[in-house]
Length: 102
Image (cartoon, rainbow, N blue to C red; front, side):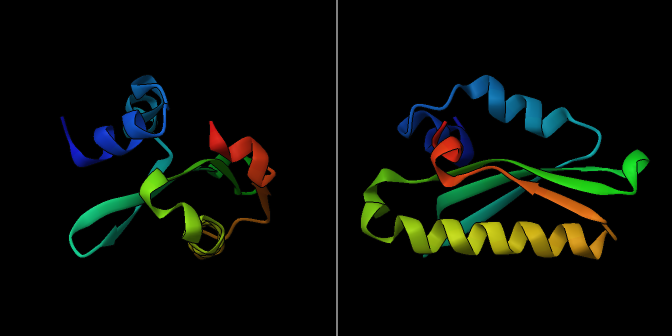
């Protein structure tokens, strides 16, 4: 089991979400490591056909870091937005934090 798969399983996210991210032609998986351990991940889709536009699909933070969750989520969302901007996205869709706990 990969470190990302362990992270997803540890927070109850279906492994199929990770596999979909890895195989989407315009998907990007962002990873946050702390001391060599994968602690958070974000999945972004950048659709070149629509302007381009970006969509943050999921943010996952290791439950062991619950006290830092908001800070880590904000950082991951910021990195995802910067990636979208770098690709020239005219629009970036970021779901509400409560929807990102999937």
